Length: 161
Length: 479
Ligand SMILES: Cc1cc2nc3c(=O)[nH]c(=O)nc-3n(C[C@H](O)[C@H](O)[C@H](O)COP(=O)(O)O)c2cc1C
Ligand code: SF4
Ligand code: FES
Image 1 (cartoon, each protein chain N blue to C red):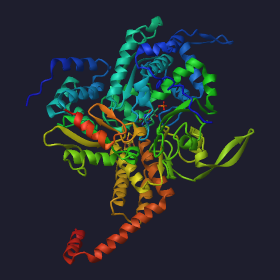
Image 2 (cartoon, rainbow over the protein chains, first blue to last red; image 1 turned 120 degrees about the vertical axis):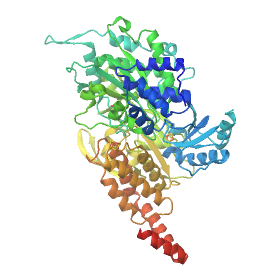
Image 3 (cartoon, protein in one colour; image 1 turned 180 degrees about the vertical axis):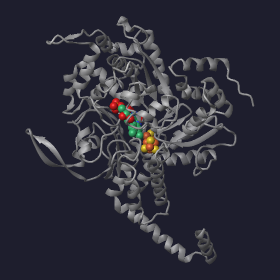
Image 4 (tube, rainbow over the protein chains, first blue to last red; image 1 turned 180 degrees about the horizontal axis):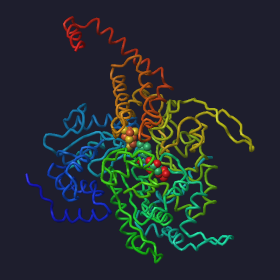
């Protein structure tokens, strides 16, 4: 599989690199750009990033394996992240997670990210999203939702066209 | 009547207040920066002069401002440790990682009043001779990062950033750097590693004190979002005026994040120490009390790492009464919400996040939830932390899934006691053991009863188990 970075994305990445006196510092930002564009970070993307920043692939690979937000395989088009941590748990986030899984035909007890067969939805638990005062909270892609009731959850799913 | 004292959040929730620079300017925005950049040098009687940056640093010290990120360390003192003789550039990083469970205050500032943070940062950079600064924002705040980037662009266009800012001769550039979902990036040396493009493994101190060997091994200041906003107000009001807010040694205002089982969870800015925990939970101006028909069970007073308080706990605290030190008994709900009182009561105000639990809460489940967080977030460098956080989480998982033992309470404490106290590189070691130590110490019965019930149930099941299954079990346990 060949990996090509669109010219516009590469220009954006080149600009990011100028924000730092040391190129390597840009790794996380470059990986974010790549993941936003491709949806995940492939081995080829790791190699491309390393070459871009004058590093060995391992220097980038170790980031992709450490930071929870980076994905090494494709996830659903709509990624639902439900907060697992205490304040949200007290506010019903585990029932919310179960509700999403039930609705989308996913296994609520399986570990890690669950994706529907058609690749449309992924559901996962994440740690505290810093919205604890309006538990339970969640994100759907970049959008943040507070006080999510089960009917609001259904609405969110419906709005994912 | 206790009430909020909105200084940093003064405008944030006003109708019509928007995060753009025009709105900020209409509310007096960037006037304090202009004041800071044009301060005249101060001449002392002994012929020495104090230049404007040094004056601001002195003011921050005099104001008594303590860091709002977690440790509550004096901001002025931290700035005074910066190695200004090394000849290397000095960096400033705003810690916008906001990842301590229970905390959601920095998000409000970033989303609703980003220019206030920028103004505070620019002033702090001017005061510390910093020409390149970063905002390290957690990856889960994509909208926050966009808002900050827009604000930075606006500030550049108005010449509050860039070369020769407002013709003062001062140059500064600020960039946004996004994390990617790891809690340990909030720890300042982990944050620095992450900003260098590496895994966020915290650095050992000594020698890697950020003030001396920080970003790129250069002197570096790491401050929380709220701390940097406070700097703006200190310069605006003057140090002594700012210090009048709050209580001695606990000056200024602080944004408290209140969550869990209260009627009105939310963020409340208070004068430090002028409101008690009980008022924060029960007063109509704040939490508005517990849900109807419920009673209080436990309070985590400073983010999930802070040691838990049990309802009804009492503490003996040294207090000043008419100038004399006396020891007084203070109930948990009567503790003033400040740095020193909570430390004296054996916990901490940490990131100023209060999590309230009522009598419907299963305490063992609550601790299991917290322990799972730490097991997931340990960076893995130090054996006691990496293994200990995982063992504690596994034991608690067992205990909340019908596989507990009576001895689990002791087992948990034994592990927790062996993680902190200089055995680990960073304070995460403490952070993951304090909840376990305090929950088990204060709610021991619940842990023991649960474990004992599981043991009893298993003993019964064993008796009735099929002989073949039993034989298989015996074989498998021999391997
Ligand atoms: C495990 C751990 C996590 C932390 N997370 C944060 C955080 O999310 N935000 C923050 O401002 N400080 C956090 N801190 C505290 C920082 O290390 C540092 O003390 C703080 O940013 C200093 O800023 P301040 O002096 O303005 O409070 C954390 C500390 C530890 C040990
Ligand atoms: S104490 Fe834990 S989080 Fe901190 S450096 Fe060691 S292993 Fe990492
Ligand atoms: S615990 Fe869910 S957002 Fe903090």
